[in-house]
Length: 129
Image (cartoon, rainbow, N blue to C red; front, top):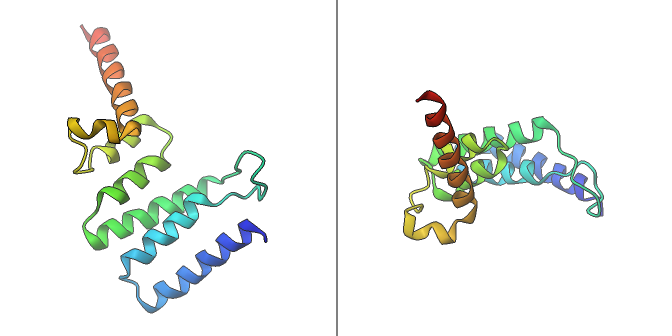
């Protein structure tokens, strides 16, 4: 089966569901997941080909889900995962309620981004002194 057309078909189904119930935050999240995993290359043996609009659509859907349900660690983590820029990643990872230092081992992505943040802030402070 054509994976890309399956994902695009799912997105169309989510569009229809949202026309019936525009406040269904779960559907926004699921549609965001579909946008986030869309691979336009359609060959899993090669690097995924993604368009910037795919990420933009996923971000829009995740933000709408947060607006409707008040946010969750899962949604914030998904948003953090989408961004390439470590500062933007950190912005969403920090919103997770379950990211206390004792949970850092469970969240290696956050740990590596926070290490980047510490290093970056350290370098910035050296330059300003």
